[in-house]
Image 1: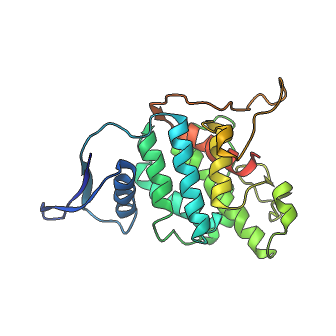
Image 2 (image 1 turned 60 degrees about the horizontal axis):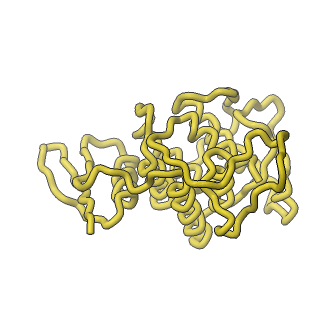
Length: 250
């Protein structure tokens, strides 16, 4: 059985093995959780087989849905997940391409860490939506605008059962945020499942979550078909689309 060791080098150059994992994604998630904490000079890395364990959109879909289910079961809110996702993504902001294991590890780590606190500036900042997002900054703008929307929802009190049919986010007068005001998903599992299904596909009828649309539907030009497609890397444009679909896809 393959094993991935998590190692650390401290400020004095001393190297020590922290732990070992039977799953590469779990090992990467623990490394990201450590990297996303207080700023330090320590370095973390994995020693083990370099080949990714997530190779297709189907692999990533199942991972993200499972993590969403775990967060729901633990009582984690979507707001908590998004603040954690933003926090663990910051050390990766300089990377252009992310393999699927790293993307899965980001989501896993987001459910592990104590998330960044809500900042008052996020609620009044102008996050202007870019129709063709390409950078970390574009992804960040979408996620921070979603966090701000959820804070506005919370000010109005608990959502009722009809919210999942779609509601508009209450925004302060003159507030400019990165996305449409329409929301359909309000928990980690729904957000991650719809994000994957809308942006990258990977779902199957056997999951019992969604069914393909019957017949041709040209009006749904962004409808992702079920299937298993090999993917080497994702960019921040892909993660931005995942975040957008997490909010707006049904």
